[in-house]
Each structure stands twice: as structure tokens, then as C-alpha cells.
Length: 228
Image (cartoon, rainbow, N blue to C red; front, side, top):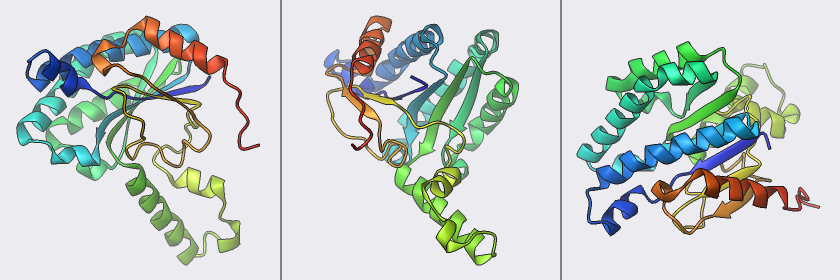
């Protein structure tokens, strides 16, 4: 497997079950993120993508959004030396026009300082929505056609793939979603055409290395037919 993608759902419900503020669920979820990174490094998986913050998440309260952005900035700034030591490249993928001003500097620093690493490509799908990504791709392709740089008859799946925000990243072979919900929620809709799916009946903060290894083992036993 080259690429594992994860929808880390259930942080708030994990906290609610324990009569805690939702912030505690998000904080606990960072431990599971570190577990996923460790598993991918050990298993030789080169791409790990997290649905970190969707465009729809902007509907949440200002207080929760501020906490999430600060948590993200603090967590990755603190762990930057560790990421560098492990050879992990960090990329933020999404609509950059929505990136909060107060963490743009952190995003730039993380991407620039890890740009040359290849042990693991850690993709944080941030301010991301798959439908919006495809709309942007269509506009990009239309502009090339209008400018005479691309002929209409030459447009194919590769043309679209290269116009997406995930350009150059292989499609995920496996997508895992926690919390017992069985939907993609506007996540990698084009890229997931031939992905396998595992929907887990536990919340993201409950994820361990062992559970992730079980998912990888289940994936290896799947018969992948690619539409045949």
C-alpha cells in the first residue's frame, strides 16, 4: 500500500460520552494521529492523508474553530524537530484562501522545513472539500482550453487528476473512517474511485497502533478488481 487516507471522526462524541468539553476529544485525537504516523513509517506506507478540517467545519462555533487552529499550530510546531528527524514531509492541502491568518506562518514553516523529506508524506487536508476541489479543477481546465493551451478532445482522467489540489499524490488504496458513520463527507471523491473502505465502530481518540495494523491486515486480504 502506498497511500492510507483517514477520516478521524468522533472526537467530540468521545468527549461527550465522558461528560467532557469537546476540546478534550480533539486533544486526545492527536495521540491517535501520532500512532498512525508511527504505523505508516514502520509499514513503509509513503503517503498518509488526514481529513483535518473541512470547509463545512467553518459552521462550528468561533471558539471551537479557534481552539482547533491553535491546537493544530501548537502540535505541529512542537513536533517539528521530530518530524524532521523522522524524514516526514508535511503538506496542507485545501483552499488556501480559507487558511486562517494566524496560522499561515506555521503552515509555511512546516511545509518549507520538511519539503525535501521522503520517508512519509503527511497530507493534512485543511479547509478542504472534494466538490470545491473539483469545481476549481474544472475552472483551471476551462481556462487552459480558452487560452488554447489544451484541446477539448485531450481532456481525460489524467487531466482532471493533475488539476486537483492533490496533484502528484497517488490515489489512496485504503480509506478508514472512525465513529461508525459510513460516508465520505466530501472527502477525496475523485481520488476514491477505486479505494477500499473500512468504517470502524469506534471514535478516533480510541484508535491505537494495534487497531490500525488490523486494518492494514484486512486490506491485504481484500480482492481488488478495479471495476472488473
